[in-house]
Picture 1 (cartoon, rainbow, N blue to C red):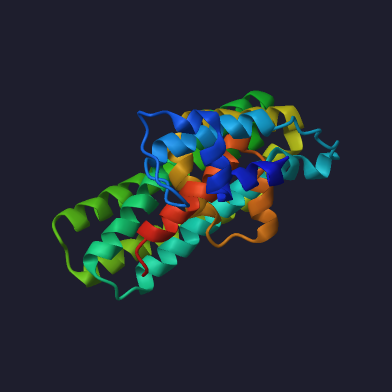
Picture 2: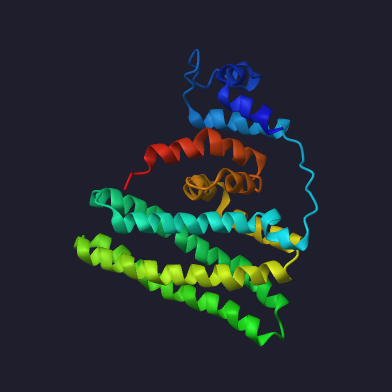
Amino acid sequence: MFSRAAAVVISPVAVARHSWFHDPKQPFVQGAALVNEGYLLSVIVDMTDALSQPRSPASPGPSSRLHHSGWLPANAAIHEAFRRDLGQLLATTASRRAVRARWIVFCDQLRFHLGAEDAALWPPVQVKLTGDPADLALVEAMRDEHQLIEPVLTAIDEAFTVNTSTDHLRELLTRLHTTLSGHFAHEEAEALPLASEIMSEGELARITRTITRMGGRTRAAVMMPWALADASADVRSLVLRQLPATWRVLYRAAWLPRYRRNTPVL
């Protein structure tokens, strides 16, 4: 299924032959030069939907529920992307403009990630834990740790606004590194395994879908290439399989190339 859709993306001739593309109101350039990206992508989306067939999911055992749902690979890739960016922000000698551009993306993704967990992940987990004070306390600890992160993000935002010294900025980024690393370690060692244990495959899949809807295609267009830029091929495949078929095509045809073009090197 996907190979046929991918062929549409990489073959301008195939797209040009499509009857929808010969709209006289749309620009057309002979050969491979297709201008009006939005119209081209709409054609790709429509054609991919027509070619896509439903997948037949396997039946995973309890130990693989998070992997099958897409939650663990996606969350792991996102956590690693935060670690990657923060390490680069701390070590870079790039221009302040480049550093700020990378910070803006990092900070936006982190705020969304923490907010999505608070809104879509921890509430259903808490419902399952009713009557279990110790595990409920663990979930509350996740929320409390999120609250510790936001003031540091705000301080760094302000430091960029007033063009603070490099030393002060590095001090703030180091504080964020310590706070965020501790939170991720705690979540990965205790909270996510707990979610895997008590939530069914269907419940985990619903959480994934809820978070996907919260961000929508606009956020996915930035988040997916950012999060998967340095992920292994296996993780990348697991995460992309959770996306709608049209989004997978857009990831390869537009989102990833745009990310590579526009992301400053640190």
